[in-house]
Image (tube, rainbow, N blue to C red):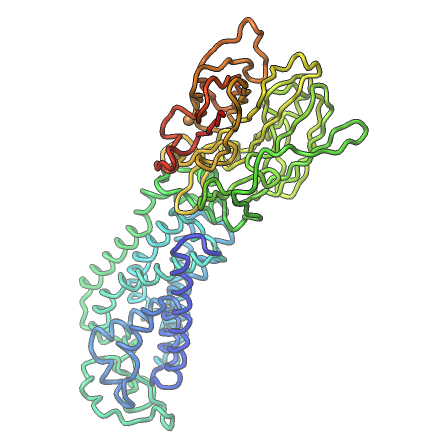
Length: 628
Ligand SMILES: [Cu+2]
């Protein structure tokens, strides 16, 4: 599924890569007079480098007209391409196979790179260079290994010097789908890595091939085959050492191949070898200055980080998992503006016990016209359904975890048995995905409470898990009554590039949307009342990050309860703003003194904007009281 715009590019890229590879494969075997090892080299390279591989093939290797391959491939730059392809095809195959295996095993990134290097080098040297070339070069297998070792070593070092940082930075970058072989992003990074490796290995290959230390492109015209065409101008290519088999249609005649006959000096080879090692070391080690190379695909594979989140070489996997997006591919239902959160939750009664069901799952919720969040929600609602019970009720709340991660529920402010309190690990094992857990207690208090997860609440509550718990007193005289009642549940959201991250008060994680009861103004509800009537607002700090100074226009309100506890009449006080901190509740009674549109809003002005924009006079934490 498409998560980011570049996913479209990746799909297009791999379609092109597939078509390009098919073309190269067909053309190589039908029309190009080359030894099989080079055919496979170009086919693999085109598979890895897509249209770029095709471009290299047609520019440097594809015989333009019958009998011209020798002459066409003679220029040094083309020989360098052939030499690089020969190396990269084998090395990259080894590296990619190793990368798939190390990702599955969950090896840390630094070890991945070492295994990949060894696998790439081994595959390139032992299979692609020595095994596939033996039939053409003659000699024993181990002679071939020995003779091609140095050139392959230098080329591989430069190749990995280019490929390693691409893998490190992109796999451990924002989009860590790149660590998972079942994701297109993984293969995109591999492609880009091979392209980078090709580019860094190419200059050295030019020199190696010019100094007869490595093979370039070759022509092969077996007698009697359809390639057995007299090459008309093949003599022009005589300066190329490795125009092996030209005109003869046969195998090496000894002037190419591994009979180096190179004029390169030992100091030259040593210097190039040393430089290749330095490049290799830099490419393998330098990224560790920026990314945490100790992490593995098992730790962080598939995560997506918000832009500008602080991510450095010390950031642990746990922090990355905590701050990763709500995966849109795990969304099970979508809700538009007609859906409502905070709906009173129905129950059944068994043996005098009120039984409620809460099922957290991943949903898509509309907070504004055209603005959706991928959220964690109880029963497909944001806020979660309102549990409305009576003081002295015996309740059982059965939780079925349909989230992709662990959860628990904490009943904020309630007096209950310790093992019903909810803190994961501390009072209960977390409820794993797919598991059920029942909370059971008898309420003794009354007032405004709420529930929320206590397993990674900084992540999962920030993604939408919270709901009101309103408990009516057994003695109606204990209730502070008003003509109207409105519950305000606050929330902060971080929505970037169409993806939802858990908002947190830390760098890169600050929220940019704010909701009351799951909607941002102007999509919030309007409260209708008449002059002279009273409104009881129950403010609930269901949010995680900020103290919201909640203010009501049109005159002061009376603060009648705090944190569920009714304030004695003599101690109640007038105010026009209450600081509603995370977890806090304030019940206030406001009187409509004059007709008109009066606002309830947060007094941190940024919180009354939607991604810093204002619409119809504001945004975010704003509700209109329409007094007639
Ligand atoms: Cu605020």
